[in-house]
Length: 131
Picture 1 (cartoon, rainbow, N blue to C red):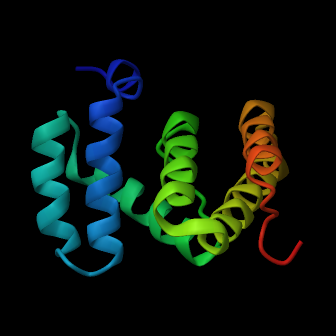
Picture 2: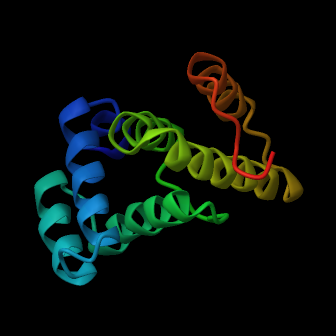
């Protein structure tokens, strides 16, 4: 399955989210989780670790510089909002806006991601941490 095909598959997005959450909570070792998840979604362990890193940065409100694509970022935002509440979402939004600003600083404009973040803010009423 190609990246473009599975990134639209809700079951795969959920597997990535759950594994990323377990790694972030230190309930499973990143290397072990990366190998197992890579087998499940037909990707490489190195690529899978990008999701783990992105999720951890979003939970901490820190800027990440590599992503698994806009659909994965948006899925993480939605699931963080559902599972962890407004405070966690505020940190995640701060992180994603920081990523967007970083990408724009190197000439990559991601207006769709910014629009999705603005929509999530409007729907939830949650602003990025520190805003």
